[in-house]
Each structure stands twice: as C-alpha cells, then as structure tokens.
Image 1 (cartoon, rainbow, N blue to C red):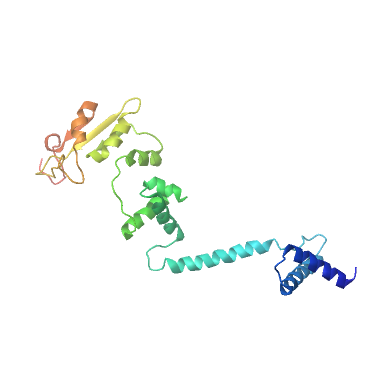
Image 2: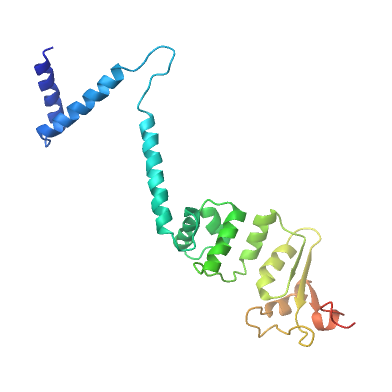
Length: 228
C-alpha cells in the first residue's frame, strides 16, 4: 500500500474516533504509535524473554509512592506523628466517631499490640481523648486472652460489666470487689466518689454472690510499712 494512502487511512480512523482532534493531535498519536510499533519489531527473540513495556506501570507506581512518601513526611513534620500509619489511625477514629480501642485498631488494619502502642502515643500527644467505657473491658479481655476468665477482681462500678461477664460463665466462677473504705491507712471512696465510684457494686454484689472485701475490716495490713 502506498505510504501516503496508508497515512491518510490512519488519519481517517483517528478522526473517526476523535472528531474534535486537530492535525497536531493526530501527528502526536501517529508518532507515538509508530515508535511503539518499531520498538516491538526489534524485540529480541530466542532463549531470552522478550523485553516488554509491562514494567512501566510498576515503575510509575513506584514513583507515585516515592512522591507520596515525600509529601507525607513534609505534612506530618513537627506534629509528633512519625508514620502514615499513625495518621491512618487518627483518621479512622475521626471517621468512626468515638470508637472503642479495638474497633479503631482493627478498622485501620493494624495489629492489636502495635495499635495499642500507637493509641497511647496519640493520647500523650493530645490528639486523642480517652474516657472510661465500662462495657469495653469484657471486649478487651476477650481480645487479649481469647476466652472468658474464671475469676475477676474490681473496686468500682467501672468493673461491674467485667465482673458480671466473668461470673456469668459456666462452671466454678469467682468475682470479688475490694471496697476502699479505710481513710486512715489508705483512702475511703465509694458511692460519692468521682472517678472510681462504687455504688451499684455495693448494692448488687452481695445479691449476686460476689465476695465483698473491706479494706478497713478485712485487711490486717494495707502497705508493707504499716504496723501489724
């Protein structure tokens, strides 16, 4: 086929697929495909694998990742955040809106112990505020040890859900509440306490058969330096 005729045919096919294109667009298209065709025609054959353009995508991904790493390092500089994983954990917490620790860690695809360390770090930096979730203790215990314990010990209503969960299992169970009622040798706090309130536990513990221990009446010595 005449080269001019071949060129016009290719131009016609290109114009049919790109009606708004210019002659400059066709020239760029033609030259690019011409070089690609010429390079493929010259690929080595024989016992060696032919060189292909498949690696171009991987090189492009590598460059994008490198640029991503550079911009990430610049963005988190002087924030106290060391890695993109730390940022991912913070973003997950924001998206989930006050999740439990285990929910945030697993949702950000991190291992439990590593995620816990990162959370503690974010708390120290002031990026995350932690509050006591009474219902979260059974979940955390089950995640860490993988089963329901046979014994549990607590000293406030914050431990009630844990004690209830442990005592509700099958077989022999033991639940104990330490009542901090010794103002002389230690501290006295229960129903009116702020952070470690013990109210429900005092009322329902005995009814549920839990062991109630009074530091004032049952402990002979609280600290090693106390006189016997």
